[in-house]
Length: 283
Length: 283
Image 1 (tube, each protein chain N blue to C red):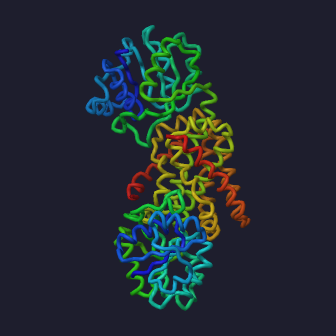
Image 2 (image 1 turned 180 degrees about the horizontal axis):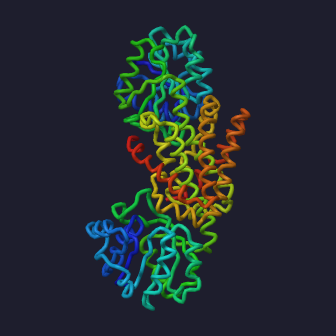
Image 3 (image 1 turned 60 degrees about the vertical axis):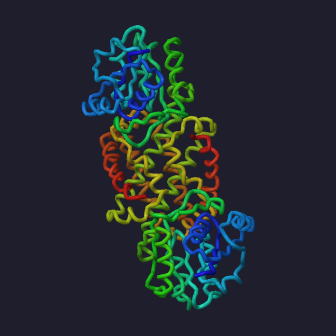
């Protein structure tokens, strides 16, 4: 595996490139991105070896798609059309059902592996790339049975060498669970940020009075709308389900307070403290 | 200031004791707590010099109240009854209106200073105490004009020496703002934890799929219900107002999704990204 093309040189694509160079010293990484400034930045930071275009895909051994999930739906079939019979293509998006569906009947479907490494930060662009970002992180692999075993094996071994824990599940299960443990957190954080900004127009009050707890809960509100809007669009039904349940729980909590039922308020919190044990399992 | 009594030897009281010993080397710290195990633990950890009871308050130069805000309402008048004419008493609770009101007509009101250092973690008890916890943190001082200037000055100088930034405001303003930048975050976090736990009964899915973003947004759901229930009770009206607005914003976001108005979804997030600049002001 020598010629590697990465489409989308942002936080995820850039971090993957950095790890690749460590695990495959002979790798020559070509960066493809519609953002020219990002390409030059990635070249300067040593994240990629050269800037390329879709022509370079013809000689690629591995193509990595790390672009917003709406763009991925358009780009993946084009990529499959261009690659050689020996190449393997992976995507790294936060939704898996739509991308698997869009290539389900493509003749080169066996050369694609759908992956979702649960890694990232609230920042974006090549300057946000971090070496070792994927170490000890879970990577969810969907529909592995539809990928040519020999090609899948090469990629899965690479993931393992980068320190990722692999987990296999159907694409629809992935989208359902990830709505709860990732997508909902982003909405709760964005709306918390909005609520406070709307109210506290005199920002000095936020600056001075907000502590680390507030910072922790609104951290995800710094995330990129370009990345997240298409995720919510593709995972619409699941995300709406989580939102409905979350809003129900908030209304219930509020009702207990209005009724002065602080024993119920206490119990709501006590029963959720249990999250301590669950979080211990997260690196 | 030599004899110092700390009522409530948990995260806040314990951390304050640790800093005290550094800034007032001659200080002799007496710990008072209804939890005997905590007292012995604090003694063993070197957080306090001796275990005491309310009798010891008679010779105290400084009394620090760091107990849940419902208990503080009962204990503060008793403390004021016992102290000498030279002593000063401070509380450190997360609500300020009720505590100021409960002693508003007390003859020793001028010997009390209402404070709220915006510091802490999601952990509790003396083992959670941290040296330097208050460094670079904001401490909100309420009704400073009702405290004897000479006594207030001693305490405010101590806070400054510990590295705190002081901010002065009326108690009702404190309670209103803090509902937005602290109390609401705790409820959003608890209810997020509840929503995910309720749904994901097979916990393995949470363990494996949750990333640092989820952890960040539910971190506060580890907080102590014993501490937080009375805070929500005392700040009921303000907290309900923040909850109402937060739920409204979530419902609005959900409605945009249901209507497939993803331009509005995008704009909601884009307009909130602004939180980046605001958060830069938080240590």
